[in-house]
Length: 389
Image 1: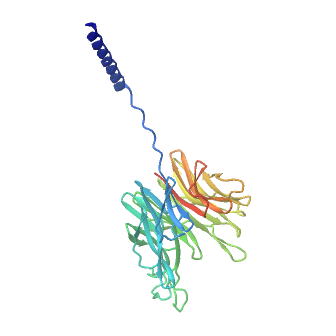
Image 2: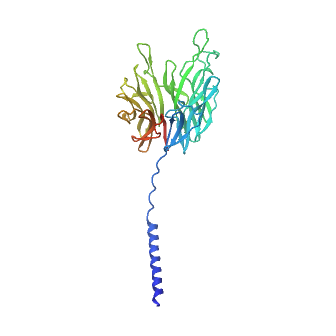
Image 3: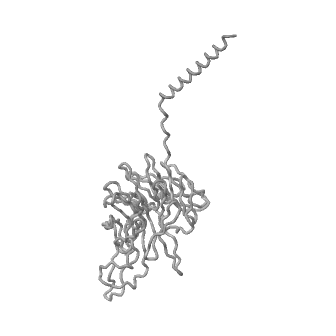
């Protein structure tokens, strides 16, 4: 009966030896590599009469006072460290006049911006470090009572002015219109009709794309408040007196290169997609009969990506141009449009909308050409902006 304890001790020794071997093997093995984290996809748009944004497909509605169709373009959304910034406006009911109050939303909470005109809106937003830049316009509707001083004076009430708010402080940009004397009697003044659609901050330089609808119209951008006219020889007057001129839609800065997208009315029938690099114009299509438009630009690794649409065989096609080569994102009887493009690593994201039978557009973004729908098609919806973080 005495050998049993020795057998028991041998078993303990064997288990201890195996455990020590496991610890040694575990300690010498390399830890498994971390799994790559998928980026977050943020999209701004509308569904029915509601303004909202999606984070990875989950919607967050803005407050009911968000003005639709004001501030919604490819530059209306910015994301910084998971915080979501959206530019726009709220309605300001003043008697029978509905004006705008400029705001931006931070994670769904509105911040009202100062405005002396009583009618303003934000159209684009950019976050650089702790600084929040919003670009838009302020409208001074009453120009008839502005006192005349000199033909070139900058009047305090002179139509629609391009404006930048940096951390809430407004600064007006010099307009493209001609203010001053209209007739020899000095009874009235001309007014600005400037528009803004994008803002980009690179180091200490602030770029804003836009232009003017005042005839003769201009397409251009401002760099640190100085106008850069992109119109060149693109404007024309047809034999029937109608005018054609370019318009801008977005802006991107890569190093010392400035890219601006837009469209040019090259005939009386339809516009043509265009972009400018450092002021030189490049047409993305030669079809002035069916029409096309460039809406957004993003530069990654030397490659230039431009989103937009072109009409093909009677259907609008969401399109992304990479270095001038077009790829359409829908085919058949499905109409679509692309409003924004962003690149993350090797992945290309394009936000827009596409038609779904029996009769609505759905908000959608394409990742490398594969659609991801954000709405169910029960009501019209559009995706205007996209950011990846």
